[in-house]
Image (tube, rainbow, N blue to C red; front, top):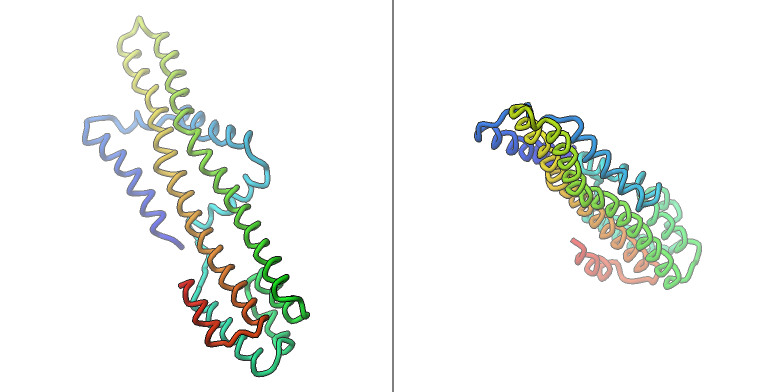
Length: 245
């Protein structure tokens, strides 16, 4: 579990409430359900309009990476490729048939299966590279959905403030109610900025970080299997793959 994400969120929100408290503000004024609804629900709804259902579902699935990040062990992957290359050089590509099931990566499994089945090395590389790029494009679309939520949130916050001011103006004959209403109205703007800059954008950046590591990991595996398919010397192949770390 990535406790750094939790720590960051706690610190970010604590700083807002602490600053409000030190400034003499009432904490209860920062808690406003209607503001939260128009900012959070409204920005998600606006993002759904511009995106596809698959992108929305994929982005929700990728959000779990912020707390439970995927593991992309580049040194271990490089070592596995080296051992496969040594075995292929001593015996043959066909001897790697029993090792296909040991790979814990779908792209690498298909690539090695193609190599063992006698596919042309260049065709193998082109096809698997396209799959890697398509997967990356799907990840980017999901990340863009998250970022669009963060983009709409501040605007929805302003809209919430305007609605709050409209309601506050209805109490012009009551100065106390008017002042309280104006204070509550601007909470929507705070929610919009906070939801965007303290939650959505940081989480999207972390998801992007893991997506970049996934791309690097997949490229290493595909380049390694391509090197095995072309009969490249294990030591030379390992040296070339060391650039990924």
